[in-house]
Image (cartoon, rainbow, N blue to C red):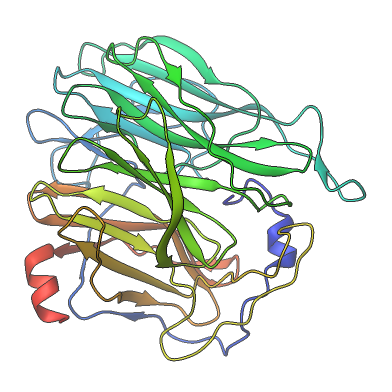
Length: 370
């Protein structure tokens, strides 16, 4: 789960290729950013973010930023996909984050179970005055939870975010959604989605979700089973009762699902294998019950015009041989303008980071990469 569990830095068995130059799809443009995501677009078009120092605004698409307004403690800016900012239709700012204050993770390798005191809580805070002050800071999910890949508002006004959560007997992860019907003031939890598994990187992990054209929610879930699993909610994240394999081959790595203003769905993720070759699976019993693919050398994108029933052929956005491009953040900055910013951009395993903030014009990109 990102850098939360650094055991994976030892166990990750990437295909050892020569230290090579990064390749970027020529249909991709680079962004000029001086700050990491997450970002949100304010009602006046300004870009907003939150970091460990506080809430900031940019009037030039992320090149320069205002001085911070303090928001909360407990953030880890080096951990991608650990906090998100949302502006609601009523101009409330809602911030949901993993609170690293008192964070603890331990794993008993003999029992292959998490320790009793594992802690990484989910918290939420909000602002009703455009970020000048922040109120209602609260824990909304206890226990040990890791990276997540969405914070959305549905057409009805409900706020929804998906999370994973470690459980025991056997030790694994399962997922749920948290939702609020009062602009982030109070929160409720859905049922758990449990697909089994055994290991500290096994089960149902690091989910992402988007609203479909008919109001249902689609969740895509990281697994060790060579593909995303998917869940459908017919009541905006209160219950998830249709749970099955998605048919989208993927490595043991998260993706980011987003519904564009056009209605098209987009998914950015790591494929099961690099283009043109097979990525050897790794047998790491403490991580997963069965051998799993940890391919993260290529970041790919697919689109759907029918609510995820079918998807376009994957297109590689960028490639880092011997390294990784993973844990993406997506944002439709303007209609049809998609920002794609991977959180982990290492040129060699967990070494030598090199940021890769990208953007595409969706229609032009699809036309150029057919």
